[in-house]
Image 1 (cartoon, helix red, strand yellow):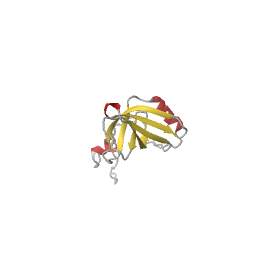
Image 2 (cartoon, one colour):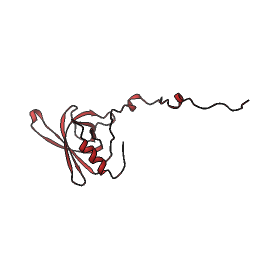
Image 3 (tube, helix red, strand yellow):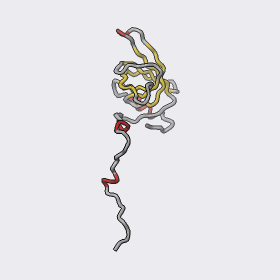
Image 4 (cartoon, helix red, strand yellow):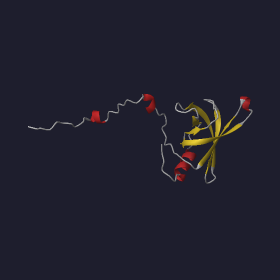
Length: 137
């Protein structure tokens, strides 16, 4: 009766996300919106042994959320090291946040993930309020 082949997909076929890419490439632990901003300057403050020898390291901000940041620096940073992250917005507002370096990027020796010790709702609200370009990651 019909000369046409049924090429409709089942719902399971449609939502099959099987990929030939490595599973590691899909691993994303972030659950908050990450903003890409070029109007924020960032510094990481570290301490040496027994809280002596404070170091101030200028870093490049790759992305930011209310839970943490991804930064890039030419300096070597220790994983699980407690730091203070200082953020200065273009308009002059600053945030100083207690945080911990939680990971080093697999794709670059110079990128580090930093997790804030606590959710920072004030920072999250401020990021949203001052966002002029809608660039999310």
